[in-house]
Amino acid sequence: MNETVFITEHLPPYNYLENKKIQGISVDILREALAAVGIKLNESALHIYPWARGYKTVLQTPNTCLFSTARNNFREKHFKWVGPIIEATYSFYSQNKNIKADSIKDLEKYYITTSRQGIGDHILQKNKFPKNKIDLSNDALTMVKKLKKGRIDIILENENVLRYTVRKEGMDWSKFINIYTENLTELYFAFNKQTPDHIIKQLQKGIDIIRENGKMADILNRLRPLPE
Image (cartoon, helix red, strand yellow):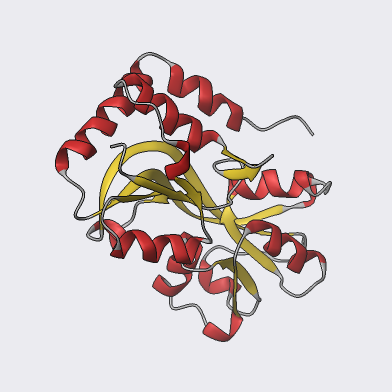
């Protein structure tokens, strides 16, 4: 496990770089799960990459792990999985009260931004959303800035991530309208397929231990929405 390189992205509150330290809810879960099986996380083996680069790196490189990674049918066969660690809801948000939708089809006339090669991107592709209406962004902060400037109409993103980003920017979360919720999934640690099974089992054991002893719940409680 000490030789494994753990790759994540800037995606607060799950994982992010602050004060030259990689931290966040999923990082804390990783540290606690490893500690539960007697392993100290090698901080030098922890890296932040843009999502698309990290995803490609773990697909191609032995002894690597990508987190927090939403597990779906498209990704299932490409990784070995440890988890789940967190539930995640992906929804369409706007500040335009006139936008209504009962399905993704109702949103095809609007410009939508979402994460490049992320779950939102997969959702739009799966539903054959018009390519000329899709804008791909590297992170949630970029999405919020595009909406603020009127460059796009809707953001498709993980609710916790978007809420955190909006508040970090000093904006009013209550003005962001959930137009339509498409996907409820779970986040995992995704390992390169060549990872030995004993490493997978070791981290899974750690996850199971901290779920049972309450440490997982203590960490996840930080996701609870703050009062407006």
